[in-house]
Structure formats: C-alpha cells, structure tokens
Image (cartoon, rainbow, N blue to C red; front, side, top):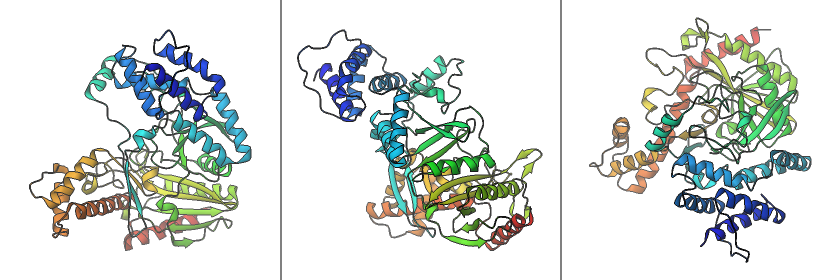
Amino acid sequence: MTIYQTIQGLINKGIEKKLITKQDAIYTTNQLISLLNINTFPNEEVTPMEDSIPNLLADLTHYAIQHEVIEKHDDQQDIFQAKIMNCLLPQPSTINETFWRLYEKSPKEATNYFYQLSKNSNYIQMKQIKKNIHFNVDSAYGALEITINLSKPEKDPEQIIREKELKRDVHYPKCLLCIENEGYIGRVDHPARANHRTIHVPLGDENWYLQYSPYIYYNEHSILLSEHHVPMEINRTTFTQLLMFVQQFPHYFIGSNADLPIVGGSILSHDHYQAGYKTFPMTKAKEDISFPLNHFPNVTAAILDWPMTVIRLTSTHKEALTAAANAILTTWKTYEDREVDIIPYSDTIPHNTITPIARYNKNTFELDLVLRNNRTNEEHPLGIFHPHEDVQHIKKENIGLIEVMGLAVLPGRLLEELTLLKEALVDPTVQVPSIHQPWLNELKAKYPDVLTINTSEQIIRQELGNKFLNVLHDAGVFKRTEAGRKALHRFIHQLNKGG
C-alpha cells in the first residue's frame, strides 16, 4: 500500500462516516498531504486502503515518523493524529447548528449525532476503550459494575522526562476542561485537542458546553462544563442547573462530583458536571426509609437501600425540588454528630458536602443527594469516610460520582496483579505483589478447595466486587448498623426541625 492509498482510504472513510462530503474531498486531501510534507497526489484514480479510521491514522503516523515529519514521541503522535482528524471535521458553528437542528426532532437524535461524531473523529478513542475489562458482580444491593481501565495509556519514562525538560510556564488553556481546549493543538504537557468539539448548552443565563469524555467509562459519558474557569461549588444553583439539563435532555442523567478534596473528583478547579445515557446500579436501588419533608409537601423523600447514605427526592415541581435539596444541603453543611464521627468543620475548613444526581422521567424530576464528609483522623489519615486501608490495594483514589452510583473504575495495574492472584490460588509457588498478600491469604482460607484457573477467575471477580462494596460502605456517612440507623433518624429529625 502507498501513502496515497492510505490518504484516499481516510478520505473515503470520512465521507462514509459523514465527517465530510464528496465536495470536500479535494480540499481535505490537500490539507492531509500538507501535513505529511507531500507536494503532490496522483492524477489517476487511487485504490483506497480499506481499514478503520484508527488503523489508517496509525499508518499515516508511521509514515510521518519514517519520513521525519514528526518525532517518535507519544505527544507528537497524538498531536499529529488530532491534526489529521481536524482536517476532516466541520467548524464548531456547523456542528452546533446541526446538533440543534436535530434537537428540534429529538434530543436523543441530537446527542446520537454528536456522540457518533466524537467517536468517528477519534476524539473518543474506541480502539483503546475496547481494551477495558468490564463485568458485573452480585451484591446485597443488586449487581455492582466493575471496570478495569486499560484505555488510558501510561506515559513511558522518556515522555515524562520530555515533559519535565520542555514544560513551559504556559497557562493556556487554564485546565483540561476550559472551553479554550476546543481545537487547541496541544503540547508536550497538554493533550492534543485539535479534533475536540463542544456543543453550546445554555442553562438559564449561563453558558455551558457539552462534550464527551475521551476515555468514556460508560455509555455516552459526557461532561458539561462552565464557560468560566471557576472552582466547583455545590449550592442551590447546582440543583437548578442539573434539573434544567435533564428537562432539556430527559434521556440523560446528570450529576456532580462533590466540591471538596478526598470526596470530590480529580478536577475541582473548573465547575463541571458529568452526564450520560446510562442506568447505574444506584438508580435501581429500592427505598429503605421513606419520610416526610414537613416544609416541602410537594416533594417525596426516601433513604435508599444503598451502602452509602443517599436521599432520593422526587417531585413534579422543579422549584419545590430545588428548594428542598437546598434545605438539605444547608442543614448537612453544618450538621454535627460526634457519636458517628460527623464533624462539619475543623476551624474554618468545611467537611460536609453532597454528591447530587438528577434525572427526569414522565414529567417527574428526581434528585439523589449522597451525603459526604471528607474529615481525616489519625486512624484514617486519607479520610474517615474514604476507602480504608484494607481495601486500598484495590482502590485508593477518591470515590467520586461514578463510583458512588455503583461503577468501580479500577486502575489498569490490577489486570496483571489479579492474573497473578488467580494463578496463586491454584499454584502456591506463584508470587503476588506484597500489597495483595493479605488478600491472598484470606482467599486461600475462604476457598480451600480451588482446583482450576476457571474457578479462581470466578472467585477473584466476585471477591473484587465484595472489595468494592466495602469501599462504598467505608464512604457512607451513616453506617448500615443499628447505631448508624439511629444517627440517620436524628439527622432526618433535624431536617424537619429547620425552617
């Protein structure tokens, strides 16, 4: 295959995927040969190479490296591939116009269009994402979901050295979520975003922008980001905006990470939400305790049968639901119950906050409010309501919005480590990483009759799910014990005591 056949293959694929039209073919070809430092293209018809867009991109990148168009570094390859795909993408205004024209027919049709475009442009890297391991595990709360994330490649040592050597004092864009990332070329310490597009979604009098996550963890994993680079804050406006969004896109849920370290997400410096077309395990949780909200007769309230403390509010009245959620947040922020380690402040440092999730179905709004506390102590220096030491070999990172709802996003390192663990259950000569040795000892004692690799595979998966369940229990503020239940009723009493 010649480079011209690869270029023609990508052009044809772009037309097939409706990124460009036949009318754009000559223009796009000229853009591509310019990127490849090629001065000509055959006059006769070229037989296109038949392959997927990611594979064609890989071939073009290989050519560019061989002919010294780019250097063989991860950042250079990512930037180059994003540049190539940018040649096949419409301008942001055209994409927005198409999106909102389709929205008039159906919100779902509009998001389908944008999701497919984000995949076809290789912004969502489906070839990498398909490497992820995903399975369900039964629990007392229904099936929990486990994902081992293999889609985000680790940086090689040479790349890390390059970042240290070449890192400049550049503050544009201010962060990975800023709107200025749209079309940004990228650099050694900032990912390529030339093929990145967003949809303008006004929420009230504020401008917000919808995009998809490059490494999706669930179906149509999207991010709604503020126009302004301002820190995350859970407040009344948060609830208003979440409910506005689901009313516009009723097939999506939307939620926010908490706004404090330890219990919040990885980026607290830029206000944003996460959404998608997905029913999580927590969504299907049953009611455990229903109770009245005396000051909000139009709102029903219940505690969910879930390892974390979740208050589900439902109402057909959006304003009443917003007011009720804000009243719960206001009460929780200053709530104290030392019997169960809930202390709202250390001097002026706040500890109590909420992880909220919104849905809209058949004219009924639903808000799940997950109570969070990020306090630490000597026994639990990483967080009292955070994965405790006995589960940190599996999950040490923050328990954010996605995990709260019952989907464990576990590090890629676990794949190899769990393979060793599985083998060690069958073969006592196999060594496992020291962090997993106590777990291996527990498993051997619990399953003394494991004889096959297939049996150990099932055991490892189930026990991994059990570990994740313990993670969620650790993060729950009112424990599912008699003492925790009594403390929860004290908090409900306080909610109805206030004005």
